[in-house]
Image (cartoon, rainbow, N blue to C red; front, side, top):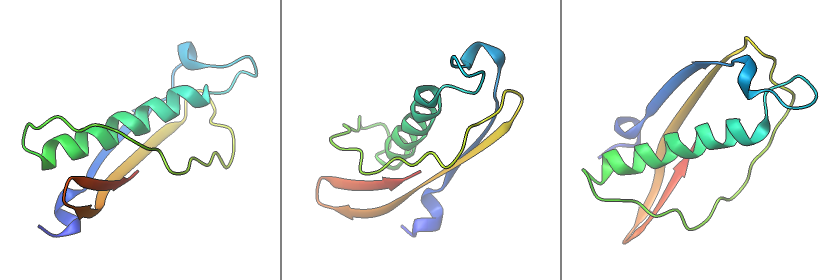
Length: 89
């Protein structure tokens, strides 16, 4: 299977209930969205097999996300070796 065939995308509107004390979107909420999309990408590739996350490599927040922003996430499986799968979100 080609990498391009494993791409999953989601688009979400950031709501008031997900704000932090600074009035921006809580980073943990965004991280959860990214984790769920990566998990679903692996799940779809495994055709119903349940993936297990063993490691999260790197997370970078380059700037705050405002309430009312539209967030687009994309994930792709970049590497598979035996029982190990690397998913980039």
